[in-house]
Length: 80
View 1 (cartoon, rainbow, N blue to C red):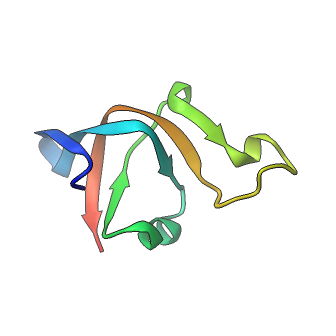
View 2 (spheres, rainbow, N blue to C red; view 1 turned 180 degrees about the vertical axis):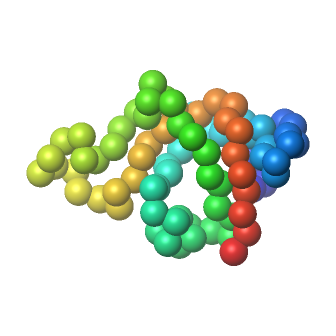
């Protein structure tokens, strides 16, 4: 979390966070906890999804991740 700027703490346990230019997300919580001590959960607008490997069937098989364009997101932060 040191790499992300928390701009505001909102109601309901959400935080407004400035994310880097490109970020990796997964839709599987079990997979997310393999990458660190914090899990950030957010709703990403479709226009901000830069790449998802299932868009190109048979190509670029990987970790089933979403590459998302950064910016300010409202996220919930969970610790493991």
